[in-house]
Structure formats: structure tokens, C-alpha cells
Amino acid sequence: MKPSRLETKFIQMKKINLFGGAVCMMLFATLSGCEKYLDAKPDLRKAVPSSLEDCSALLNNYSVLNQGYPYIGELASDNFMMSSSSWQSISILEDKEMFVWNADIAPPATQWSAQYKKVYVANQVLEVLKNLKETPQSRVLKGEALFFRAYAHFALAELFAPVPLADGANKNGEAIPYRTTPNIEDPVERTSIGEFYRHLLQDAAEAAILLPHKSNVPSTPTKAAANALLTRICLYLQDYPKTVQYANACLDEKSDLLDFETLSTTSNTPIARFNREVIFQAIAVGSATYTRTRWKVDSALMERYDDADLRKSVFFIKNADGTYSYKGNYDGQLNQAPFSGLAVDEIVISRAEAYLRTGKVDSALMDLNMLRRSRWLKSQFTPVTEKNPQKLLDIILNERRRELIMRQRRWTDLKRLNLHPLTAQTLHRNIVEKEYVLPPGDGRYTMLIPLAVLENSTLQQTKR
Image (cartoon, rainbow, N blue to C red; front, side, top):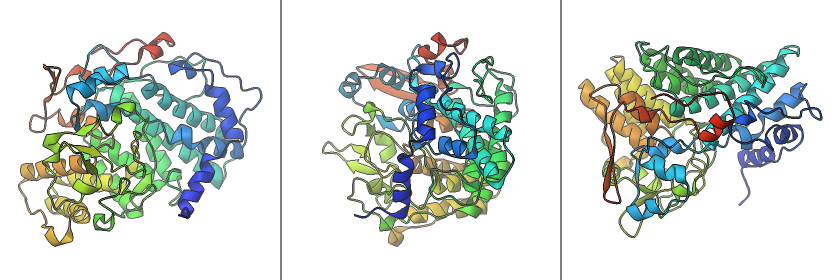
């Protein structure tokens, strides 16, 4: 089959190996863990970025900036299950222990270091742009760099920093470093939670101003992507008016939803890469833990999918033992590296929740039914009409969970929803005849910094 125009462009981008590839190799080839950024002195004598072309090459490095996002939040959440024998067979120690919420184990170092690689590249570009004359191209490049810096920092905060409280009560608590310079001699210090999110929102908001309306491929950020990121952040911050504002700005740019009746329910890859819903393309680190024979959808969650809900057959493969495995990757691949980007469905269901929480019940119902209609057999679809706010919130949150499974959203949702008694959940696992429990608000929702990072920096371990 002849590749589409977008696929062809994607292949071409992956083959970029001139300046951008050379610089990234020199920056990162000999480094491991956090010392890539914190302690090492990369040799830039042979290729120092200095032009707009150099900046463009750095930002078009798909393997660094669009891949390698964290996967461990999904692993530690409640969307999936494993048998005791499958759990015992896991070869990655961190995955094995994080699945049962071992308080003494940190995620794999890649969950941290790969994000600060992205931050370093973004800061390198921003530093170069400071010394160049401002042009339309330089403004776009600055917007891209700010977007990538914000996206990577938020991916880190979702795992390694506490959830911010809406009233600001923990704003002076410790977050993680928010790096704004490529200078490896600068001190590396934790920021406060309030300061971290001030930087984050500023970067994303400026990116939304600078970025163009369109790009050639979804791996390059746009205004819609920046506003989608702001939607995601503001929902996490429980700032519901801002969530609606940014979701509106995003959906004004891009609002296409897939019609699941047009997808193959028998295909192992029913959802295409760069499909019409994708706003920003990003992929999580692949993990061998996510093999089909081991990584099964939680049975209680599967019961929440109606037989007329096409996600049941588009997202999942039914196994011979009656369990289900995931196949609905928005990257169009049946592999262990799930989609970690931004898509229209997430923004629609986020806006539905924010509408409801700001008292706009009819608008919430409109968004909820718009999404559900695109996922169900049309002949059996019945709109939701519930107007009781608490009951409707439960419906929206269940819809969100069904829609965004394996999209790295559940851990973050649990953190924010656990702040309120009506939406808090206690997680349970039974492995090898032992019960493991994760209560709402437990300190383990803020993950430890990997040991390799601590050994190569001045950072101290997170205090829970």
C-alpha cells in the first residue's frame, strides 16, 4: 500500500540526520540518567547550533522530542491487571514493584532522563534564538521550543510532583526542577509547586500565541496543540473556567472525531497513525511489561463497556481465556509503546467535565453525547439526559476512563480526583496471595526520583 502524504512526511522527518542528529548524538551519547543535563559537559566544539536552520533541525528530531514519554503512570493505575504468574515473570524490576506500589522503588531512570533531554534541546534552541534577529520563522521556532519544554516538564510533574491544590494551600511545597537554560553550570534546584506551574502555564500560553494554525504533520506543534496542552494542565489544576477557555480555543482549530463505525473491529491496528483526531503526536517509552499475554484490561473496567459501544471491539482483543488485551493505540501500531499525545477526544471529554463543574449542564451533555455518538453503533445509540450534577459527573468520569485507557491519563486523573471524597478511590491488587492497597492521597502518588539521577546530581530524594 502506498504511504499517505502524512506518512511520507513522517518517514522523511525520521530520516533527518544532519545537524540535529549530530548535535543530539554529541549531547547524549555518553550520558546516562540525569547527568545528561546536570553534571556532564557535552563537547559542542564540532557543531554548535547558531542558525535558524540549526534550530529547525533540533526541533525536528522525532526520536528525541516525540518519543520516550513516561509510561509508568498507566502501569501503576487501575486500568489493567495481571495474574500472579504474569507478575512474577516481569523482567523489569521497577515495573514489577511499581505495579504493587512498593514505597521504596522509583520508576526506571528513562522516565526522568528522557524528559530532561527534551527540555535541554528546547532550551538550546531558545538560547540560540535570543541572539538572532526576530523573523516569522524564529517566532514559530520559539513557539515550538516553548511547547516541547512545557510538554516534557508536565509529563515529569504528573509523576514526580504532588498534585497542586486548587486553593493554593501546597503552593510552597516542593516540586521538581523547571529548567529554563541549557547552561549545565547553573545550579539544579527544585522549584516550589506554585513556581513550577507558573513557569509551565507561561511557556504553554506563549507557545499558543507564537505557533501557527497548521503544520505539515501532527508531530510538529500548532496553536491547537498548545491550547490542548493548556486544557490538560488546567483540568489537573482544577481550574475549570480556564479548562473551558482553552478547550474552546483548541476545538475552534480542530474538532474532528473518528466515527468508530467506519473502523475495522477485527483489525489488530484499527486506528491509524496521524488519524484525524490527533492534535499532537507523542509516544511513550515501550515496556516489555505491556505484552498482550501479560497485560490484561481490568475485568471490572471491561464490564463498563456496553455491547453497542464499538470501543469494546476497536480498543480490545478478546483472549481465549475470556480476558481482554489492548490494541487501540492511536499510533497505529500493535506494540508496547502507547500513544501519549493530544487528541480531540480528550479535549471534548475534558470540556464536558469542566462545563459541568462550572454549572453548564446542557453544554456538558452536548459534549458528552457528541463523543459517545461517534463511538457507538448509531442504531443503538441513546443520548444521555441525566441532569443531576453528581450523577452526571459520575457518567462523564466513567466515559473519560473508557475513552482514554492506555493514554497515560489515568494516574493523573486519580491524583486530582482523590482530592474530593465523592470521587476518591482506593486501589487494590491481589498478587501471590497478598493484598496491596493504595489509598487516596497516599504519598506514593508522588513517585521517587530514580536512584541513577540522585547519584549524578545534587538533588535529594523526594520527601513523602
